[in-house]
View 1 (cartoon, rainbow, N blue to C red):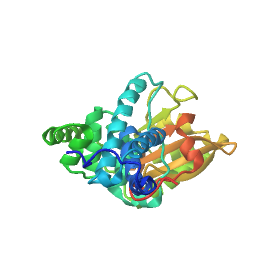
View 2: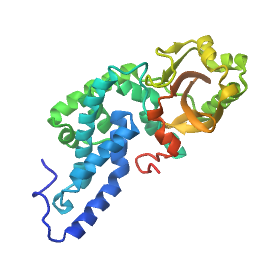
View 3: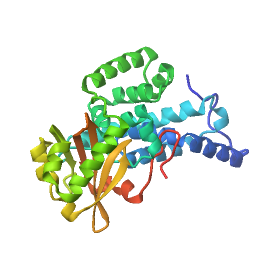
View 4: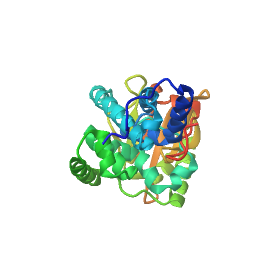
Amino acid sequence: MDDRTTGEGTSEGKGDVMDGVTRAFVAHRNLLFSVAYEMLGSAADAEDVLQETWLRWARVDPGTVRDQRAYLVRITTRQALTQLRALGRRRESYVGPWLPEPLLTAPDVAEDVELADSVSMAMLLVLETLAPAERAVFVLREVFALGYDEIAEAVGKSPAAARQIAHRARAHVAARRPRIAASAAETRQAVAAFQRAVETGDVQRLLEILAPDVVLLTDGGGVVRAALKPVVGAAQVVGVLGRIGDVMAVEAAQVNGGPALILRVGGEVDAVLAVRVEGGVVTGLYAVRNPAKLAGVKRRGVWGGVRGAVS
């Protein structure tokens, strides 16, 4: 059922209607950005989706909408699905590994374990293996706990079909889901040791803090130098990281709900290195160097979660 009871608003009282439109959009903007980002893995593309959502929402009289949140989520989801299908074709020809656009996150995101897991680099890469409709349903159901009726409206399916898609998507993700990361204290200790080893070029310490089967993924987008295939194994990863401290300044940060290092050359952001810790050692490294994906980090925009903001 449509969330609107009538058509678009009239010119009478237009100023009041527009104020209401703006208030409703602002009230739900953080949720809409979160939905779009988790579906697309790109803050820039999520912002494009929000712009399209706003243009459509601005033509609506909010007084005719029964559930403004559901209506806005539906517009956002449909715009994100359109974008996701287009991006899928582009990513097929992407040069080297594709990684999500890093998102600087507030400390309280990391404290929300489920939210932090849902936006982690590892989980977003798992979501990349879902079909567009499966990803939309999974995100809306598993991350934002929407009901199947609302999800069905958003993806243009029946509630029964949405349930089936959700079941299929959950099984797919469960088979590929990364293992539970280390505790916060264990992670802090391991990342601090990793940062010191990178800064000092301590090869032996790097070998100790990296898991034997650690995997480094590097995303240069074919624009800057990066490994075109995953780098696997502690010795191989040390060969890539060993001299970073000689040429780059290293800064600790929170990215996508987890620990990361921002690497700078001459004061400019050169890369973001997200770090995954399991069992007290580093098991995964995600290095984003593609300049197009570093704009948000350079602006220092911080995402505060569904209830927070990208400031």
